[in-house]
Every structure is written in C-alpha cells, then in structure tokens.
Image 1: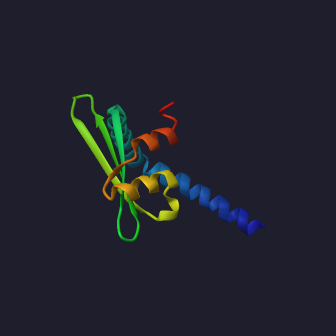
Image 2: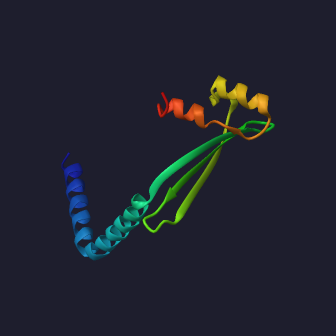
Image 3: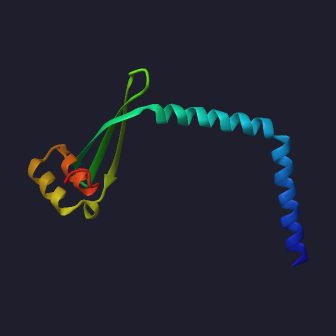
Length: 117
C-alpha cells in the first residue's frame, strides 16, 4: 500500500517536472496543432459522394468529400475500404448486383444519415 502510494507520488512529480522542463516545446507543439486545426475547420464543406463497387471477393466502398477554403481553393478528400458482403445493406446489394459497375449510393447514404425526408 505504501509502495503503491510512493510510486504514484513519484510518477506525479516526474510528470510535473517534465512539464516544467519541456513547457516551451509543449506550447509550441500545441500552437502548431491549433493552427492546423483552424486551417482545416475554415475549409467550407461543400458536398460528399458515396459509391460502392463489387469485386470478385468483396465490395469496395468509396467516398469523396469536397470542400473549399477561405481563399476559394477546392479540396477533395477520397477514401475507400473493402467491405464484406455481410455488412452491405440488402437494398444496396440489389442495386450493385443489377449494375455490375461503380454504383452511386448517395440517396441511400442520405436516407441513412437523415439528410433527405
């Protein structure tokens, strides 16, 4: 019990000491992160596109997010991931299997996220 208390006390003192010693570096790092977050948050979200594509073994979900920053520059972020058939909703599975190509699933995504009535 005393040993545990002693270890906790030593740890707390060590963290406090490290914070004091490296305070300038910590402040610089936090300011850097804050500036980067401000830049990201100033970009205006314009829209999103969602697609799904069937491969031989699985399905690939693709997302495109469009944005514009305060200077009017456009940004496009793209992401994709492999999705097992068991995770694809039945409605989307039927749509993909009928089309045999990259399939737009924006309407389904909007309904799921309650973006459409």
